[in-house]
Length: 260
Image (cartoon, one colour):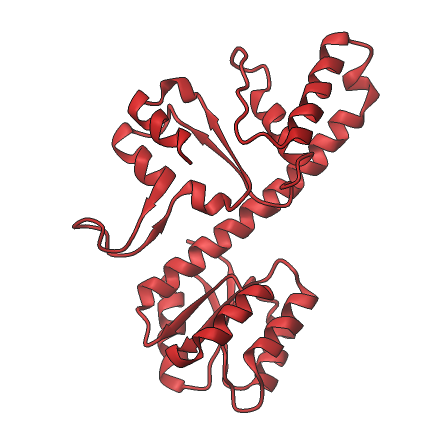
């Protein structure tokens, strides 16, 4: 069960009630607001991790609230709720920081799924920021680098790989030698360092599930596909995917990965 706090902002009572009930059932802590003024007050007191925000409120524009909240907390996950006629405004909201938008009428499962994925992406970004700080400290710490020519060569190679912004980098080495650390170093010093870094242990995922994990699927793609599932490559969105133990990946799957 999650302990994430979610603020629901919508002027329609039935929508607020339905969302709060679904979120409570999923284990979230929730608060609800009917107006922009109430939303601002609840936001200050509740300090949510995420906001489900109606685009049109009686006393406020949802995009204005989005900008206010994101200016206060850049890591806040905001999902816009909109009528289909306001789709253009919702797309504009994505450009100024919204994580996603859902159109009315919506499926509660779709809203929960969108929220879960947005929070997971934010978790990955927070984790990447942490590892960037850790790795930067390791690279700059003379006690770790010392005068060892081999280590100096490794860090030079990290910089070279990051500078050329190569699409694919093969990192080899025995188990426990720090291949993931090297991959994170390349990511940290690359032009896409602010995008997600996602590591995948190819040997730990059953072959029958690996393709779906990597590439995802659309809703209705097969019998049990009741909702859209983003794959790891889509979640990375211009970042880095570290495929650990890729040698254990089936050859046919490796061929598909090469086309990404």
